[in-house]
Image (cartoon, rainbow, N blue to C red; front, top):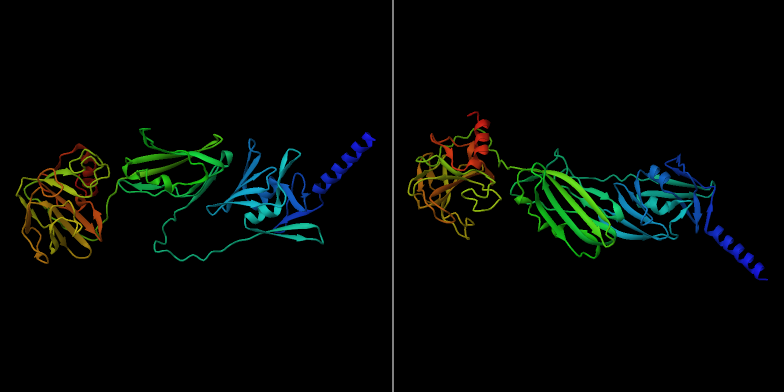
Length: 445
């Protein structure tokens, strides 16, 4: 009797097994082309399941197998999905949004091969799926979404591209905009989301100078205890503006609670800003007739330079040292737009006594740290007119002129436009490469 009961139980189990998963005569087509599979399709709980390879070739997605987690990671320009055997919930990252998609029947391993739900995965990658009962066939139709995009103001420029990557343990980065070219002294805002099947434990961002191999930035966010992390949360600790000029490598290392580790690496460059360019012929005389001694050049990136005061974000002006009380002259004809002592009301904090001259067509020059001012607002001046005297007012370490040029509000490098003093020279050796570059650009060397 016991033997009969065991045989009956085995028969019931076989019957249940056959009702759950069985090979079918179903044919799958994608845009009219038959899709070939090494095995299957299988009908599991009324749904069609197929191997990853055949469906991936049809829908143009890539896939990797994570044996430790029995998970296949499928990736395309549309989405990233983590499909785990014996788990009806598929983790999805689509358009930077993480969510779980539940299937009616879970994926499973059959003959050492994972089978995935055809309809759910096809629709995940924006394809339509139709069932033809007359021919017992599944038809996948790839959908092409045409977006109407307004022509941007900067049409013709190369658009900024976001990137998505996936790796070990389902750790991925989506909607990440890697730096391409960062301006010295300027910020760069990181964007993107790190996601993981398991909770993330920590994220490290390291920036290495290619030529010197020096690690210039090394920041880690610990104890995240979440499956997603926004790179913007660590951005305020990464001072891109403090990076030295040159080629860099950014390494983003992510570690989850299971100590799965994935690193992503990108290259970018930090370049020296050149400022705006003034259109047309510009004739500017030297602003300090008594001296040609340059103590800080435009955008010098050496923190020990005279006016940088230990900063590494550059100096957007030209400093010319001279004796206290020496004349300062207007470099071009114009009208005094503003003059006085720098304060919060006129937003010229730190300049001390200054004069701002409007030369027309968006071109302005400013003369700061003066000891005396000899002009008034709206006064017309000619090139060479004495407008003030050398001083050390405001944030200054000694008598000098802080001189800058703006074209439509953007700083310009004065060395490219001023007529040089007969005894022009640099006090700081770090300024010489930029000084020589200006001379060469103007054909003076």
